[in-house]
Length: 256
Length: 295
Ligand SMILES: Nc1ncnc2c1ncn2[C@@H]1O[C@H](COP(=O)(O)OP(=O)(O)OP(=O)(O)O)[C@@H](O)[C@H]1O
Ligand SMILES: [Mg+2]
Figure 1 (cartoon, each protein chain N blue to C red):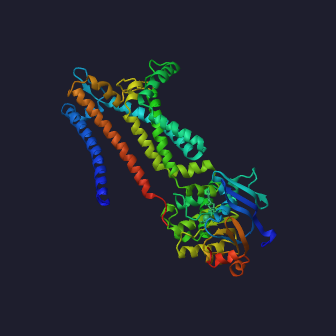
Figure 2: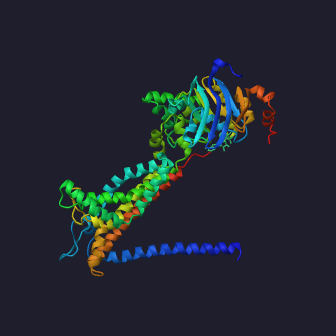
Figure 3: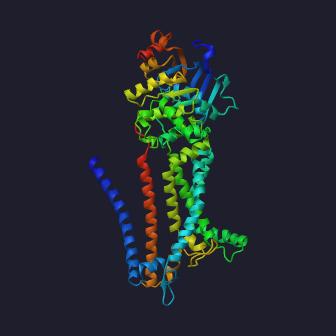
């Protein structure tokens, strides 16, 4: 095992996943350490997003899909029948590939989740909005326009707003599915800095197609191919001396 | 014939068909005005619109359509109030909640309802709803505002439901995913994200449903009771504008004042429906511009 056992926050055990007849993941077992950044890499269609969405039960929304195996979050299988997916999603936040703010004001975007979770009171909400926006390094840019529609922000700002919105739930884990793939280099750099900062408080699992990004921001890296986890190790090892030939080929860009 | 010429011919054909329908519409409007406007040489616009008495066949006649306007507005508003919750809930259920099989069943039922001839609905109002109202509330007649509103609501529901459903269906999947990922339940997501995002389409649906109800003739002719007086209770009979036109046109002598007054009533209806459609158009365009975010 790569990771230190007592630092594991979430792990998958022999997970198979099917979209109808199609098997998207085969026997995936991996463990994620707390307060670390783990990157998932691999060619398009290899099942990275599928795995990410399994971790907070977002795949429940897809008709006709099926999970086998166990996913243990703090020792508990989140696919047990008595687990409420809403509870899981409150503790495991997600940022999507395409920025997807609600067509609501910046303020209401951030307070959407916390309000549903029962946070009320103007002062509390305002403090929460400021804290989340500061964490996402967006506060200075939007502090005077909190009442304006989030749709007016640039793509990079929207993505940081989405990160702030996820952080406002104070999740334990933050899942990020190619959070910078739609952004320019400057916004990307900002979000990478942000990830560096966030890992002090959060556990981050990030999918990326950008090898430099994975190398820069992550502590661990898992390489996937055709629904299987091929190699999972400390990022430095994966990028300098991978054990598997497939990993090396992919990282060096010699892939089929 | 090369491709360019073919395209030109096809374009010309489509253009002429479009032109024909616009032309015919224009002719209808022109004849409506030509037959209706002469009334105002004898009766002032104010007396016509706000006159309390509609006695077109008395001597001297009076041509005040205020009771007819009130009748139209009241049955339309009441019908809309009934049809909005039913139509929107149906749309939400079909678009967001129903399992695929039930979804198809509901959609076909709605389409069937939309396709029912209004005379059949009117018939239903006369032989089922009217006696029931009469017995239950001990009324002199079951042909009244409540009856007409119920049947008109039944006609407006398919319009509201199917246009709202399209609007709800068009709400980007990303919004819903964002909501679920923040720990919202299905009903919270529907109430706080889906419906607000679809609001422009839903408003358009409601207004088109209203304009369908206010122009509907057969139903109000059959079940509204036909009394040309300002109603005092919801169980009074009324005579909405379309009913008045349909009932009296046959007996009004050609180009008489009565005949002109009926055409003028048609003009009023025309302007009301036009206004409804302009408002619906405005709302759907206004929200379209806001759109989703740019990258
Ligand atoms: N909703 C779905 N229904 C059916 N099949 C799906 C669905 N979503 C994904 N798949 C399939 O599952 C496989 C894995 O998809 P997934 O989205 O996890 O890939 P990915 O590694 O994230 O790819 P990318 O890098 O392009 O985002 C693909 O073959 C895809 O076609
Ligand atoms: Mg993906």
